[in-house]
Length: 120
Image (cartoon, rainbow, N blue to C red; front, side, top):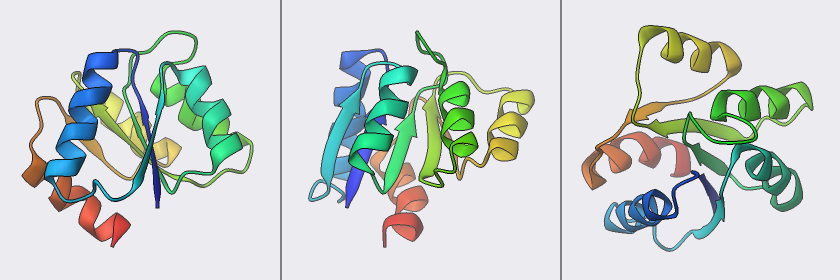
């Protein structure tokens, strides 16, 4: 399976990758996007099985990227790994079709709990 990690912070992408490995998902193909526009383009070009996206990114925010993908008919499994969390953000994410909303800081246990049912 292929997982796309979208975050404008290279360091945060590396932390997400390390945590995925610690949670037992390191054998999946991991690809990275540095902003929301790149996340949309890479999702369309590489057809990942799962997208983990930050909320606040340049060019397109995570929620804008998700909405663009859904408007284009792309139903990739998509969720947020973000430092901000308001009830409004969670409602917007759910309404747009996000499967999960993980708040930073996160743990390998939290990743396993969320991703095991999605990735099998």
